[in-house]
Length: 389
Ligand SMILES: *Cc1c(COP(=O)(O)O)cnc(C)c1O
Image (cartoon, rainbow, N blue to C red; front, top):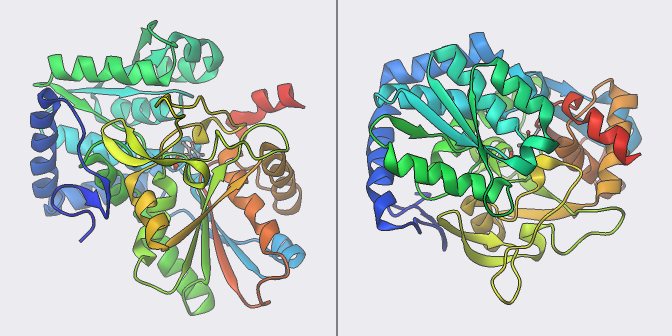
């Protein structure tokens, strides 16, 4: 069973938090384990994914891209989900869970703003109060997402301490949670954090892989040979991998290699990191010999996180998945290629997964089938992209 009863995936995961948070995490775990099995919960989640998010998202055979690379390429279209990415699957799931636990207030932290928007969206639809903690530096940089959250009725709590970015927003959110725990649910946006969050997020995102399984079977009569997904915290990737876990399907996780043409050793967590503790869990992490976490940087804000979910650290050590990094330049090339060949403008994060296809050219047979998880659409990136050209 993964994770084990203490929240470990092999050597990774667990719950490395101050005593004061232990009780809250135990309450969450007990409630989740009970509620997730209830029929009404499963039905409500499914209904909202269908009617609000627009699921199932299609599995599209990208024929022109396939022609170019010499094997069959299928795109799982999370870019077509409401709000333009997979994050909404998780925020709706956790918001319904919060409601079932009798919590009326949702808090979240956001860096680039994508998780904040997905959380504000779920809260608006369910009539929950929403507070989003955000560093003042990030508020300046991510203005359109700040506006979106406000339009959706969320309250933005500016965090002006430390580096005024995600790390500080997380600290503030936790402080708020501890002091307002009776009414408040802390909604985490990726498959990271202390147990049980990585597993809750994995479960809600697994809808991607479950759908893809049925869809690829009906298209080619068998399972795929390989699945490729980008890895930031690791939620879209674990979501599409998990339902194929026991099958003979190769998993490739693609990390952001950082600035420019070079792969930057301070950017790709699973490629260059080592085990350490961040945000309540033991996992691969980027830090120097003094224990300072590296500031990461990528063209894809969603991949700009110095840690990764514990399930991926386990997959890496167990050899169940391979992790590779793609540079900003390679991702930008793939962004154009997918746009021009298939009429789909991908999110810069997803473009990293698409870019890996090039590395497979000449290595697979013509009838090999590869699924790429297209985690989101590119509209959000156009502003930043113009600047970088
Ligand atoms: C946030 C985001 C990611 C990275 O997050 P994961 O938790 O690793 O999935 C990838 N793609 C898009 C479009 C995102 O918004």
